[in-house]
Amino acid sequence: MQMLHSGRMVFATLLILGPGCRAVPLQPPSPTASAPRAFIKFQSPRYDGSTFSGRILVGAEEGAITVDRRLVENQVLQVTEVHDCDAPSPVSIEIFGVPPRRVPEELMTLEPGTWLEADVDFPLFNYRRRGAQEADCLDLTVTLNPKHPTPPATTTLRVSRPMEQPDAE
Image 1 (tube, rainbow, N blue to C red):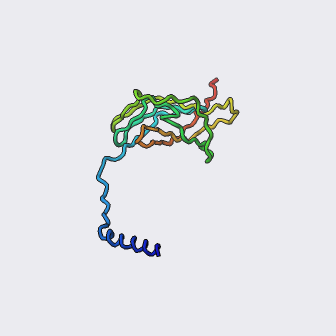
Image 2: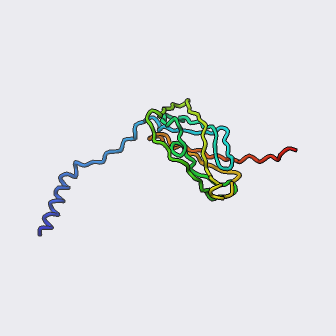
Image 3: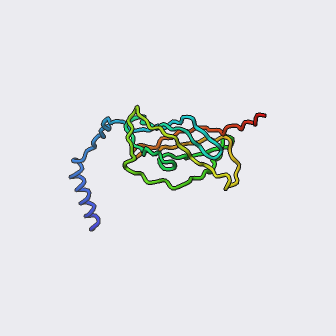
């Protein structure tokens, strides 16, 4: 009997409060500025068989972005994927050194139309220690990690080791 009485109380409560409930249509989000987006481009990328290097341009495609002006390799700027041009499987790379901490004084804000440029070097392989065969051509994915909330920006490029020139006699 107690259960029947509790059920009647819940039903009565719903009848009393029910008419006061109504569906409220969701309001569309208010128009806001689009999220900031970064871009990266390489000029004169080079690969010597163990190190990838080149001049990088970092800019804001949309909105202001904040980056560490030092573009610290393997922290702010990373080689995130490496493939031999002739093989579909990823190539294992070695990351050298311990990246320094981000320092507030080194943070720089870039607005659309402005960019930061720097020369970067990524030692990828230590073939003398590993005894591995050097790849002549690599497909690389490089990722820039700007300060939050800007999402990472990536670029993919192909680099080839220069062909050895025979000695002129």
